[in-house]
Length: 294
Image (cartoon, rainbow, N blue to C red; front, side):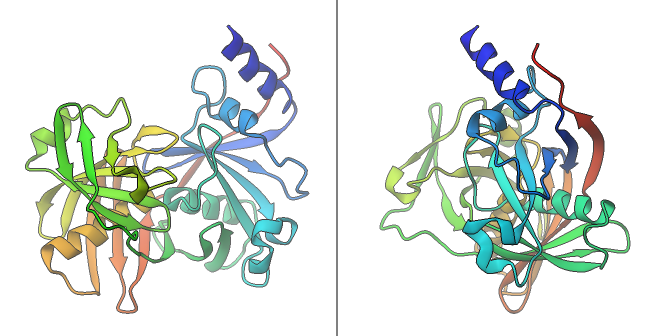
């Protein structure tokens, strides 16, 4: 009862606020337009909005706020007018969200806040150029991937099974595990967060991707996201999978992979300058006004 009352109170504090619901390949978000920078959102309010039973329901929250009004990214204001203030569904802060960036860009265009086909958005992971494609897909420049500094290869444990994983930062931390076959991927229990050891490799937590090949430069994945749980898609996770798969396959710097996620398909391309582009659909599905106290 206490948890319900806390969530209800946090949601009631946002009464009258107009928000939107959107998704990118099933990775869903609540967007909070905040042109006046008047709604900074507490972790409790974020968790209340994201609650699938007592709130609107989402994997994460995208607050749309002017970059110049956001001290943590104000140095990006000369390159990006809008800051994607992204929070995980549990209220914690994340550096970046690839699917969220596509949905964020779709909202900016639909709302007339950006009128060109190409523009940039500010994120905690840096400025991200985006491009609206002719077919409506959105492509996000995710920057370059790096690897965590670690003396030991991380080991991922799920139940009684364990595998070596590959660490990739995009810039969110990821640990990619390659499985033997599709059956193993489908039956994997991701209702609880996989254990990743040693924990010092990812001191801020980690997203874990499990991958099987489909065909040449085509893979299928599932993901458990830190602060969220298993999701239907993860954009930075798909990028991490592409990087790990290219290394495993011996592909060159310039390469492209199709990545199937439970919510659809994205295409991840690493250009010859090593920057990674994530392309996929993004859709706004609803406009909602928050009600008062229950």
